[in-house]
Image (cartoon, rainbow, N blue to C red; front, side, top):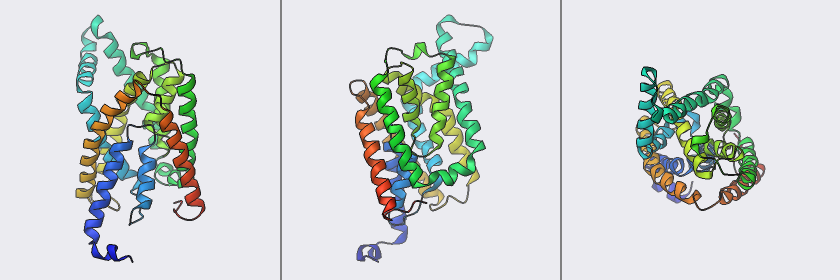
Length: 287
C-alpha cells in the first residue's frame, strides 16, 4: 500500500470519495455526456475502486433535480398551477402550459415502465464498462449528426403529442449508462427540428418527475443500506451535486445559445475509446 494511503484514515478517504462523486454528478447530469457513466468510471478510478451503484446514482440525482426546481421554479410553478386549474375551465392564456404539463406526464411513462421492467439489468448487466463505453461513442455520434442536420427552427410552443412521446422514449434510453438523459432527449429534439435551447430546456423539465421518483424510490428501498457509502455520505454527495448542478445549468444554457454540441461529441468519443482500451488492457475492471 502506498505511503500516502497509510497516512489517510479510511473514513476520511471515504468522505473524500463521496465529495468527488458529488462533484462529478453535478458536473455531468445536465451535460450530454452521461452522469451515470461518469459515476461508474470515476468510482472505478478512486482508491476504493468500487462501483457507487445505481442506487447511489439515483439518489444523488435528487440533488441535481433540486437545482432544476430552483432554476426553473417560475416555469414549473406556472405550468403546475395551470394544469391543476384546467379541470375547472379552460383559460386560453394557460393552454400552452396545460399542454406542456400533459406532455411531461406522458413523456415520463416510457422511462417509468421500462425502468421497472428492466430494473435488474439496469442495476447489473448494463453497468458493464464495455457497454458504457460503447454507448458513449455511439450516442456521441448520434448527437453530432443531430446537431449537424437538425433544422433548429422550432421552439417549445411547437411541441405536440407525437414529439412529446418520442422525446419520452429518448429519455428512457438513458436507463443504459453511457447514453445520457439530456443527450438522448436533446438528440431527438434536434432531429425533430427544435432549437438547441428548446431541446435542452424540455430535457430538463421532462426529467423532473422521472428522476425525483427514481431517487426517492431508491432512497426508501435502500434505507439503512446505501452500498459502499452510508446515509450521511450519500446526503453530502447529493448536496454537493445540487450546488454544482445549479451553476452547470446556468452555464450550459448560455453556452448552447451560441455554440454547437460538437465539443461534447468529441469528448464522448475520446472518453469512450479510452475506456475501451483501459478495460481491454485490464487497467479498469469491466464489472
